[in-house]
Length: 211
Image (cartoon, rainbow, N blue to C red; front, side, top):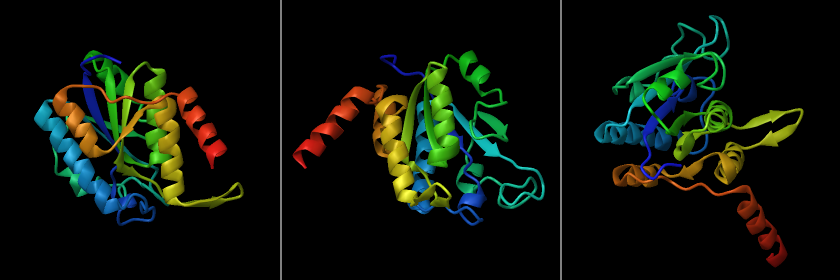
């Protein structure tokens, strides 16, 4: 991680489907995360940090994100703000089948800040790919969000999914922080620090012993 990060903010799939469509974000509250996404984009613009907007599409007729549907359109919080690069994707990671990696490399970006939806799907996939590509990653935990799931493997609430993915990401893959903390680091020109697997595990084991 560099002493003075050369950041970009990637805003992933902030589309109507997650707000007024059939896949509503439940945790954190979607209005809170939308407001924080707007704050992050405005702070990045003020600091001269490039903003990448990502939009996911599925084929026409799909139940979610169908091309041409209202649900697939960018939410006004993002659509009304300027961006420096646009990425269209069809897979979870913003790097998969897109020009994002080349665009970041050409601009000397070494730190990728991630906002948008969903924490456990497109955000996590992008975070993992960015880490594997050698980038430092920052995850804005209150400018992101999850939905609940239930399937043959079990059930989990949106809050559980968001919390667990945030804990796992902070242990190795990304510095997890609030939007306010990220903006403060941005304005100060300093990196956010992530934790590590060993320390995260040792704390958990110590807590079990004292419980």
